[in-house]
Length: 408
Image (cartoon, rainbow, N blue to C red; front, side, top):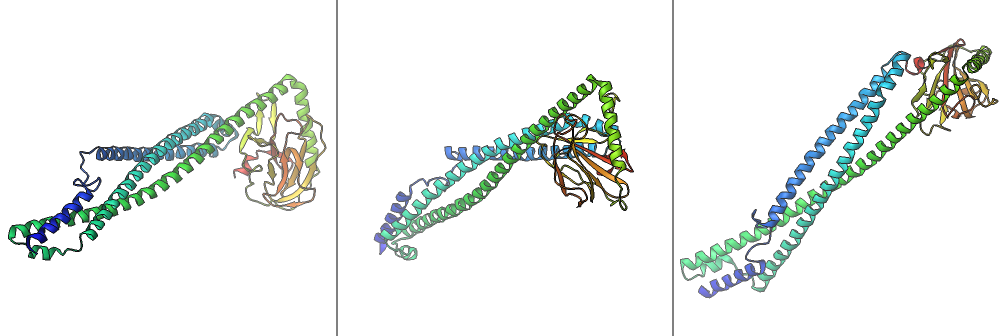
C-alpha cells in the first residue's frame, strides 16, 4: 500500500474538505468576528432586554391589581351611610386612574411581546437555515466517503513508508473525524435550540393573545364605568333639578308616595320568622349605587332605599334578595309618579323587600321564591329619569338602610 495508500487517503480527505468548504459554514465553527455572530449577539441582547421589560411590566400589573383591591376594600369597609357615600366619591378618580394605568401597562406589554415574538421568529429562521446548510454538508461528506470507498485508517497508517507519512495520515484522519463530529454536534444543538425557541414562541403568542384580550376587557370596563358615571351624574342632577324646580309640589308628592306605601306595607301580614342570613345583591352584575338611603339634595328629600344602576342595566334581571313569599305585585301606575311597576317579598318576621321602577314582573302574588329567583326586569317606570332599581327593606313597616342587610 505504501505511499500510494497515503496519497489516496489524503486525496479522499482533501476532496471531503473541499466539498465541505475549507472554512466551515457558521455556526459550526462560528467566530465572534463574523457579521452573523455579531447579529446573533445583538439579537440575544434585545431578547434579554425584552425579558427584563416583561418582568417589570408584570410586576407593575400585579401592583396595580393590589391597588385596585385596596380601593375596593376601602369602599366595602365603610360602615355608615356617610362613609359609604364619601368612599365612593373619594375613590372614583382612583378607580378610573387605576384602570387607565392597567391599560397603559398592557399596551406596553403587547408591544414588547410582539417585538419578542419577531426576534424569536428571526432566530428560529436563522437556526433552521444553519441546520439545512450543515445537513447538506453532512450529506456531501457521506457522498464523498461512498465515492472513495471505505478506507480503514489503521491500515493506511500501518501501510505508510515512514513515520512522517503515518503521522500526517493519522493527524489528517483525526482532523476530519473531529470536523464531522462537530458538524453532527452542531446539528443536534441547533435542533434542540429550535425546539426550545418554538416552545417559547408558543408561550409568548399565548401571552400576547391573553394580554390583548385582557386589554380589550379593561378598555371596555373603563368605557362602561365612565359612561355609567356620566349617566348617573346626569340622571341624578336631572332628578334633583326637577325636584328643586317645584320643591313644594314634589315634596308633597313624595309625602303622598310614602303614605301610599305605608298603607301597602300595613296590609302585608308577615308570616313566620325572618328566614335569616344576608341578602344577596338584587341586580347581579350591576353594582353602582346612584342614590343612597337617607337625606339627599340638601335635606329636601328623604330617600327610603338605594338606587342601583349601571351601563346597560335596562331590562337586566332582578332577583329575590332572600327567600320568601311574593306579597305584592303592582303593574298599574301613573307615569312620573311613585315606584311604577314593583314587587314586594315577605321574608318573615316583619322583614320585607321592595323592588321598584321595574319594566316587567316575572312572578305572581303568593308565589314562593328562594334567594336568587328572577322576579322582574329593570325599568324606568314611575318617577324615574333613567333605568334603575329602587331597592328598599322594611322592618315591621319601617324603612331601614338596605346596606345593613346586603353587607351584613
